[in-house]
Amino acid sequence: KAGVTQTPRYLIKTRGQQVTLSCSPISGHRSVSWYQQTPGQGLQFLFEYFSETQRNKGNFPGRFSGRQFSNSRSEMNVSTLELGDSALYLCASSLSSRGSTDTQYFGPGTRLTVL
Amino acid sequence: EDQVTQSPEALRLQEGESSSLNCSYTVSGLRGLFWYRQDPGKGPEFLFTLYSAGEEKEKERLKATLTKKESFLHITAPKPEDSATYLCAPRRGAGSYQLTFGKGTKLSVIP
Image (cartoon, rainbow over all chains, first blue to last red; front, side):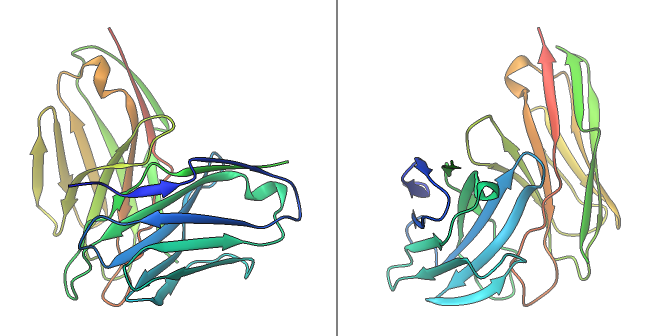
């Protein structure tokens, strides 16, 4: 079974630009979560989507947004990039059955560098 | 606010030298505590889920245990290939699928 895939793997952007990252979950998984990982803050939760709806949101500014499509694939967008947005962006998918503690399986991440 | 503290931040062990990593947490209505392993430049790899105090799970040289406020990852006779950053992540109660990660313990096993 194929794992979580993320594209692109690497991105270099300049301040003020916007960027879109893509995530394809494991087949059959309906929930997609996004995390930002930096050396200083570690892994921080951005948001989670289930059935095309944002179900949970972390403590990030509105410049960070996402969406999920009917095939469970997800995208996240960061507008007006800042230097501090440089990070590894990780996507995780899970089956997400109500009432269970679903395991989240992570993709390899997209390394974003903002110059 | 959910809090997760992992200690030590870094640990160097000789091959075969057993030790434990600690994860202390404050999460309301815990619905599982997850352990992951992360190699440099890669996404976290799932290891274990623990659901209730007293539960233990094992995988090769790793054993994870859970109490009401802490979880431990015991590494028995580690090998160099066990070198990685180990992350713990408790999940809060019903209605939220968010994981709150600790900053991890970077383990180095020296041959």
